[in-house]
Image (tube, rainbow, N blue to C red):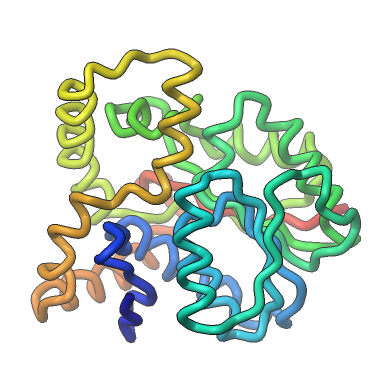
Amino acid sequence: MELHPAYGLSIPEKNWVPAPRYLLRRNRILNLLHGINPGAWLEIGCGAGALLLDLSQKGFCCSILETSTHALTLVDAVREHYGFALNIYTQPQNIPADFFDCCGAFEVLEHIRDDTAALRQWSQWLRKDGLLFLSVPAHMHRWNATDTWAGHYRRYEKKQLLETLTAAGFKIERCENYGFPLANMLEPFRSRMHAAEMAREDRESNSQQRDQASAQSGTNRKTDTRMYPLLQSLPGRLIMNMAFRMQSLFLDSDLGNGYLAVARKK
């Protein structure tokens, strides 16, 4: 388990490391959190818990809703290693209403069939004027094998995302289009990799397989683990630093392959 000064947490011995698209998203999330007073934070579908470590170091009191056994094992290892407090919920009915100052759901909503109902449920856990931080993959015309591999129901258009948030009772504070150009450039390579993996496994597209894919999509980083030494090298660090700067120039465009929204509970 390692803590990189620019990339944050990695767990190469457990085949989880931060992928470039995650790093681009993390860069923007941490930027959007500037000026936000630390409070009670609930993350829905936390994966390995890398962002929780960032938030706990900023003074947030963190809780999670997570049902993946593998994710819970990773998170528990991170919590034990770094010694930060964490409340764990595995059933949504156990989460207190009107309690959290902020709620985060990153690359989660696209895995849920009824996204509006999910957003309304998440809203119940926020205090009045609480903030939801949300990311989703962008543009249905970019649908590829990675979406099938991960168990997605959809990718979003900006208008669709904003209308869904509004219908669930949120007021939009900010909506960014992140990832351009690096995430766009890497997407075809990841798609081919995941297509080959599904072909080897002879995976069928059905509801059971989708549920299994969703459970492992946030914690399966075997290929990224093999490539991580390159990302940590001097050329890799220079490329990522340039990518952070480049995406900041295109946040208000519609060129990237992901949306990151901040919405306030009415």
